[in-house]
Length: 312
Image (tube, rainbow, N blue to C red):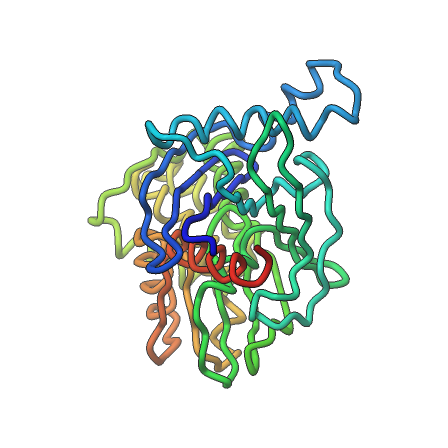
């Protein structure tokens, strides 16, 4: 019986690998890096190697990371990989599973890659989910690990670069919407005309400015109100540091403007910093009721452990 697994979250720009004890989901060892799928894919293209060598190329990167985890051998330890590794730029592109989707974890699209002489690890490559016009890769694993027991409707929000809003009813994912909140923020703050009006500052003293941004973002036309970041700097009504939080509030408020009318329980899946920001934004918009929270890393690990029981 398998007692431990290697849990791998391989995103577009990041890599995280953990040795997990299945009995209690405890992290026994961990390594992280910025060798995300996009960087590995670029290396692959530059290598000029044939397509049938692609999987071995990615395995080599994976084995280097496994070697960093502990001083003792992990040969034969199964690896579960979710995220962008199953995308068109990953180890192997897998078809998406379809929504509606039962969040029990036993019906995901997965590929078992058997061990060989070079890689002694059995690899379970996890695909994502799709609707007719939306998709997720990675969040489906966290959703499985959220332990949603309530049969009533819940809106599960995964804040981030591409924030996901997932409606779950009777333990079935029935709807998905993606909001490019984080990516648009980075583009506007760093590569647009607004970049001269924004200076990054993570201080908590700007809560009132963030609150103002949330309210205006939820009630205004985003393409119009983001220009206020520029005029606030031109007319010296806000400092660049204040504008950083104002712009963040505008985008998060715009993302959440339909949530106030949804009248469902909210479940946030993210790190503590994003939880604090989104919870405050929800309170600002008078979205009442308790907001449930799952740490994204913990949910991912639980999801992988559940999948180990189903597929390994």
